[in-house]
Length: 425
Image (cartoon, rainbow, N blue to C red; front, side, top):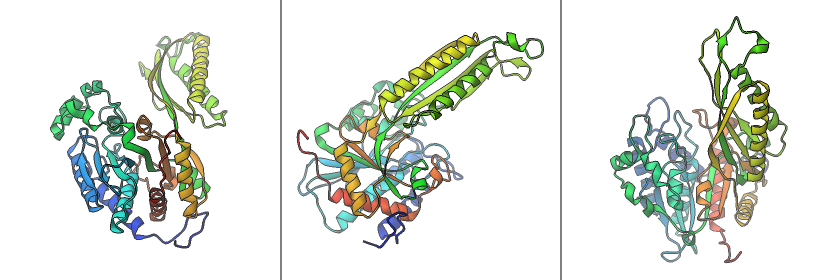
């Protein structure tokens, strides 16, 4: 192993890291817009990216194909054919005006690790499968984890009727892409086929950078509850209605938002709350707002914690609405459960990190990942790689080559030393 500083992870990069960064850059050239990176589900850019990724899989010694929803699937056989697999992967779609590392780093690193095994003629007592999930972000049809849900067998046929901003349905888009929407069920796998699912991903947050560490062991993928609130008061003239007599929906919303922040800041166990959208009507400078809408996104490391927090937040904003004589409607628009990383897998991830000479640092994932779907058919684990400034979903998203190399070395060691869980374990 190359010499390095165990705290910072500084070391000379290997050809593995250099190859990963080269492929990250190559994939980033495939975009809807020349001035930024946008690669959306079932577009021509999506198809071009899939073809490029399948080529890399084949170069790495894998059989590769597109499944029924557009996932790019590669398989590297074990010591004999048809063994159960260790599945690795991440997504290859992006948000609009994206960074180039979110998703592709995990996918390309997995391919590169398999390529290293293939070059050495190394076969393992299990197969390795690499999945490039077609749609994790949910940009086009406002439904996330479509690719991984198809593999997990939890894809809902009803989403085929949803339409994008141009009015095209998902069913129509799949047909145009060359896929058969009536055969999405063929993408589904069953629990016995997978020994585990492991994903390497950029952190998308600032914790590893604050700790001056290149990699971290994920403890859980936080669940999320999203709510939409509507406050209704009474519109009125900005100059004639005294302050004491106003039923101002916007100032009521402002107090609710402040309360949400206050409650989440007071929690020291990982609770986070975000109001990402607010709108007021009628929206005139000289009219008291009679109606206000805002969203809430509440996340926590455990489901019980999150559900208790959501209950308390709703009680608090109900009290604010009552005191201000405003009518309140709250609707849950989205809910995902927390997915703990399996302890037996997490131990193996940590052992690989330590064996490469890095401190073992554990942290939860506040962002959602494909493991949230894959847990229905396999135990899951995740390895985070530091990203500069904690920036993600933005063109400034960046991973240093040394950190990409560190992640690859840990993942390769993890693969080569992977021990399936014993039956009943």
